[in-house]
Length: 93
Image: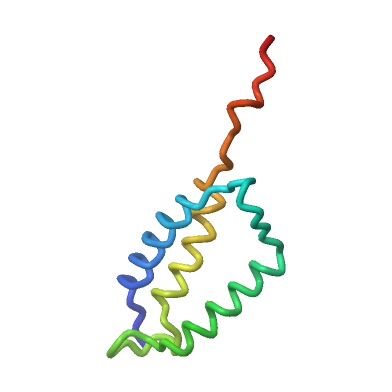
């Protein structure tokens, strides 16, 4: 059994970059609860199973690059996906 790090690293980096671009916009009205994150993770696992491993990779029966991209999106959102600060919150008189 061989582990291939290339798809995992590339998937994580791409997911991290995409996750860092996700910003909170209060005008959109979107609210992600804990249940919605759990549903996204379950859907990602099902999609990774249906995609299957990269050709000639026999490490796991899942698309490891796809799973690492999903993890990268979540980590990128937490680390670099900051909230938008409103300039009108400054109460200077």
